[in-house]
Picture 1 (cartoon, rainbow, N blue to C red):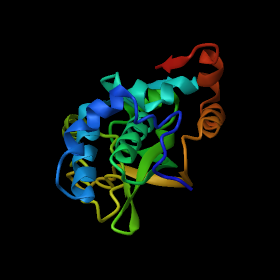
Picture 2 (picture 1 turned 180 degrees about the horizontal axis):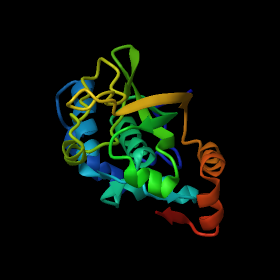
Picture 3 (picture 1 turned 120 degrees about the vertical axis):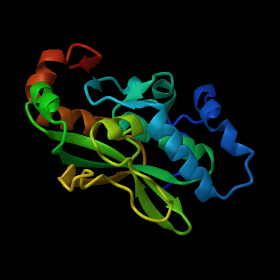
Picture 4 (picture 1 turned 180 degrees about the vertical axis):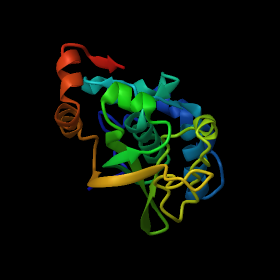
Length: 211
């Protein structure tokens, strides 16, 4: 499988993605340092928003995500993967079902549950091994929720904040859907249909859901 390829979704040859990674392309630092810096840029440059769900494949193109100032975990993972591939760093999307335990009142109000699926994160290939990175939760949001922002050192998995700053459970993984070479749009859409049936039926004629 080619985890460096530009695809319909990971369209890193576009002006929008090239603008994001331009500062890293001429740098003499290692690929690991570039990956770490790009992770921070995506994590904090786009505000996390789980209440905006796209139902059309066009919206999952990295170049489309790049033009916004916010995105959910899938959006931000796609953006990071496109940037990494554009820098010559193999990367792929990894999906799972997770449960939030902090700041869940609005989630339950909107979704009817504090379980989020599919949750997107990134597998990055560095120094001969795959490591996980989750750029979803921006630093400002983490501070608001009293949770330390996720750091990524390029050597160890950085998947989720298991505990908040007071020791309470923040997030847990319920089901692992595995990794994919490209964005699995049909899988994502079917997952949304299955887990949020009422929401999907209400908004399926639209191109996106805003809760």
